[in-house]
Length: 286
DNA sequence: CAGGCTACCTGCCCGC
DNA sequence: TGCGGGCAGGTAGCCT
Image 1 (tube, rainbow, N blue to C red):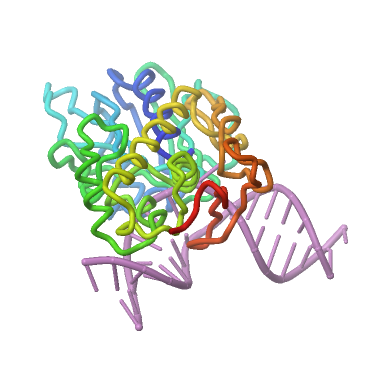
Image 2 (tube, rainbow, N blue to C red):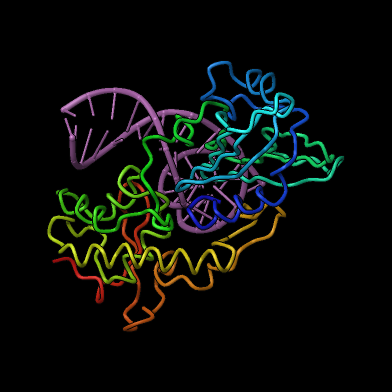
């Protein structure tokens, strides 16, 4: 369940079920789930047993579990299990002996008997066990703050956007400028702010760019409150339940539906090998 | 450095 | 019915 609100739903579920518990064992069943690990799945399996989960954190679409060495009494986490859900990843809390899922790629067993399964149909997601640098996994250091982060500086992000001569939607999808935005929420925030997806960022005022970021924060907050966006059973929380924000979408997947503001039919165009949905009346390219 | 394209996967849906 | 093509929430790494 890929974009920021969906990943945050998963993070909260892992926080509830994993923090304070010790990992008894890990099993990596598919090599692609550990493809970014130098030693592959065996490296995760060999190094994670006995560590206690002290927190579940997130930046943009990247989430990680902070791990401390329980026996040694070490309290400052310097190791984390990074989880990226890719296009189709799920983290599911399971009772022992739960019926097997066809796309189970990795799992851990906790000291209370629960298991945490990483199920991922398309295998774009992965786990990575590695060092935390300033509290963030090394692999996440290039990712920008996200719009729901209290420390996000919208003025600075707007200036960064304005310095670039490129289409605004391309920039919104670039996780190194502002993170957490994917195809759904890019289309939604652009609709909300009445900006054409191909509008060049340097032609927008700083005030408009800040409005756009605020629109992103608003739409993602509402999506989070409704458990995220789910079109099918691939996008679920740690208990396997879907969110309801798909019912509130104004642009994404609304091709041929009347715009909620003006009634003009929403259109879909291909951009960056994916669909862009927008209102051709409200969102004019200037 | 920025932008554009491709690769990595599985599964579903559509048209022929 | 079968098959090919297009499509799907993402990221990273090449080229130019």
